[in-house]
Length: 159
Image (spheres, rainbow, N blue to C red):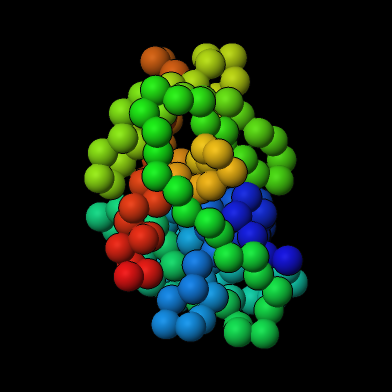
């Protein structure tokens, strides 16, 4: 089943699914766009080859349309609570963090310096209270901080 925190393969590397949403009645995977060259790139998810449908460069998000018949779990989106605990979740590990600040399109996260996200974690969902509130985009190793794209961006797409 294709769901938030699951993985896909792009150019032989494991990558992370940030969310699965329904747009115009069709399921779409969402992840960080900086891992791709651009629209039209091919990737493998759940044994199927699919294509990057749309890149939202301003938000570092990629949308990948999935076949309507594939098994998906639509992601429940939440709103980030500032100064509260959160989790970066994927099929390899769970990393604790805290939402330091939440803007309209970005979340600023604090991590424990000994437990930082790794390069393959790009696009991983950030969760609070069991709901996805954002997707990791970048980390700064010297101050143990990270930036995530807010789930508010997806909510605006869904309508």
